[in-house]
Length: 236
Length: 239
Image 1 (cartoon, rainbow over the protein chains, first blue to last red):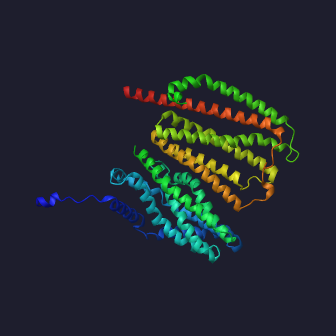
Image 2 (image 1 turned 30 degrees about the vertical axis):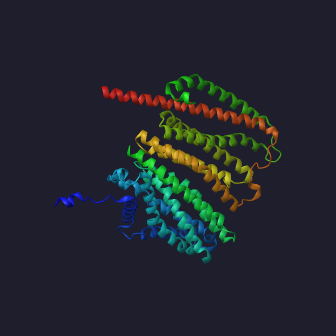
Image 3 (image 1 turned 120 degrees about the vertical axis):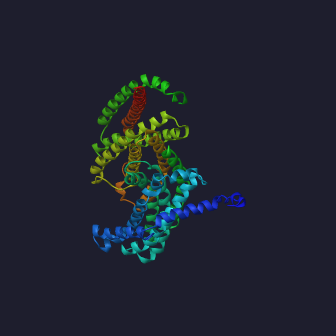
């Protein structure tokens, strides 16, 4: 190798580059192998199919709860992929590298949560209207279902990332994350499903949507800082 | 309070204080119980109004204990203070017990009042969610083996939970306006007859002192437990 090649070291990636690389890595890990986003949609479809089997297929029973059950399924599906969000990286040492790397740990948590939203939340948001229709929700409400699911799944992703960071290194990770995170999921579920109820009875949905967005923004700010603190404490 | 943040001084200060608190709690509980049983029955609710003297202070203390937990978690996280961590840990179980008592006695009150053991209105649902917050906190603390790490993670959760509790309460209240229960399901919403104030206030004070006694005793126990662990570790090293 000539002296000139050695002197010209590659430039450090810079903030935008590092962000993009991490985001692509997270999406690859989330989608790689086994159908990508379709796995989350498949789980959602299974839940939607089980409800009528459990509660009876009468439209008069299912119709009033269609919106609420779609939201419940959304919350549960968001919950399931959280366990491996940080655990996998902690096991093989990648989390230590990320902590020492170019990005601050808060940014890492933020990007992981965003990747969780894109990989799991967006497909679910597109599946939710179909599921709600299948459960008997009026077709006029399906755009609203998609919109609230889109915003709400972002809230679930951020709060869920916080829960995953808190449960790092704990035994019984999956159930623990659920117990920690489900009470925190209550506000978006209330506001999102509430928006559907109000639309169903002809009232304006503006306030409910605004509250849902407010929660998501709040979670987007709290989760990176609290999550980074939790990751640092878990690393020791 | 900062003077007491030295564990030695804390132990010295609370040493004589704790038995006094226990004694005071016993006295207040006895007086409160006597007052609760001798106050005249309500013309609407009959004798079941007496459950209020057990139920409402329990709910108040359940909430107060969570505030204590949250504030202790803040000090534990920001100042990395071991005593604050012990205080947060010590507040969890009494707080959860008070909240569970509130839920249970509320259920007992609901059966004669509304004909049902449970109803999904704003207040009951909020208290149930508070109980879930406690469970999550205790589960997180218990699931992490390393005590230091468990303490720090639990402190983060305690703080996040404290900030989220008003949000959850607000969302449950908002949800309740959507799903208006029938008007007769509003418990005790009309003004309280002043004859019920003495037993209520006495029981409230009794519960408060009882929580303080429980909390301080638990913190002292926690300090002693850590000392024992340190001694054991030192012994093992020297061996």
